[in-house]
Image (cartoon, rainbow, N blue to C red; front, side):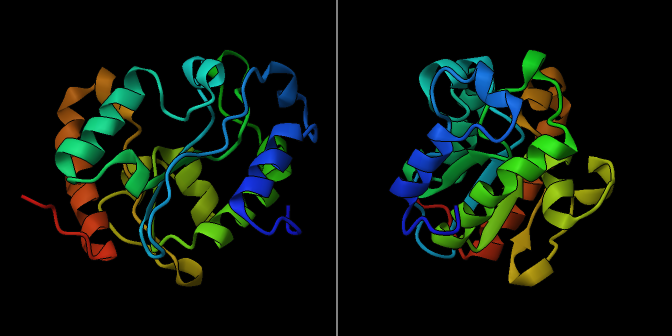
Length: 191
């Protein structure tokens, strides 16, 4: 992954990866989507959903529609103006959390992806991606409602859209986090 000179080569390397057993469940490569300006926002889920696996597009199912609404209606941006990816690039069996070993095997691809994109603000969606980025082992309630800045990257954890579909009352908390991320990235919602 470190030798990939651009996102296109990295996406190809990701699509051919067989470092762990998750590749056996991969139908379509789910690398990422969108090209934010340097310093822009990157959203990160944990692993591709069955809908993502079928389409090759991250966040393409019902939770993806909610994320799209957050980006388009809430932030005033398009999906192409942010980057959307997952911690691991292949679906996990039954949608379970990715294991530490699976995350470790996939992390060189993710790290190179972050280097090439140079996002100013990372928005991990859920505790799994937040804990990975922050090197912690904490619940989301302990992590959200703040901005972390390890290694010069601003990280604003928030709820995963799937959780918001199950618990709509948490949408207010998520929107506060999104506004915090927008401010950190210098993004003002258009008219």
